[in-house]
Amino acid sequence: MKRTECHFILFAKAPIPGEAKTRLAPSLGPARGAALHEALVLHCLKTAVASDVGPVELWCAPSVEHPFFRRCGREFSVQLHHQVDGDVGRRMAHALRETLRASSYALLMGTDCPSVTEDDLREGISVLRAGADAIISPAEDGGYVLIGLRRYAPELFAGISWGTESVMEETRIRLRELRWRWHELPTRWDVDRPEDAERLIRDGYGYLIPSGLDPRSRAMFASPVKDCIREGD
Image (cartoon, rainbow, N blue to C red; front, side, top):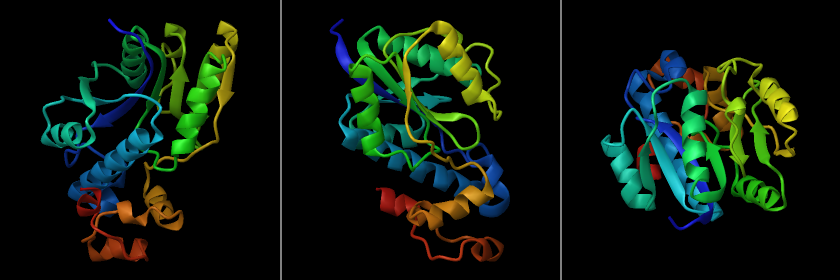
């Protein structure tokens, strides 16, 4: 197998109403929560491809067969992969381990953080090239939104309290125990709660929020927004 320098892994769930962006359902509703999720996936794909850090792979859950994923594969010329079953740690560990078998470096990101920039991704790969073992971008909620590795260690992903505010600090402890050199990119915020959707507007990402909100939701989003699916096409 020919070895490449870097692969970019993007994790995404299928935009199934009632299963995507469930914590936003009270304000957006299941269908528009799924539409927002689609818009976020498209935004992150555009950022990843434009950064030109390496081939982009979309790792899909629960299956690559969803029409949205097939469309992403065609429109962005990205490879589609299945995520394995299990918690997010097991899924990330599998994807990074497999990718590092064929690539010198691997970057992995979810699709909940539109504020990650092309420059963030370029800085990450530059730091790995310079000799760091890992790069990581902390999240404001205590987790992280991006991780990059030049080598694999299962300790980084096993036994972490995923979904809690201690994820980043637990990961720092593992990195110290491994005696790895790592670099932290700027802290970012992700989109999980109703107040995060409001922040999309404040920070200039209001175009990602689907139009056609019900009257109660319109009171929450004071700024006019565009149809995220049409804008993402």
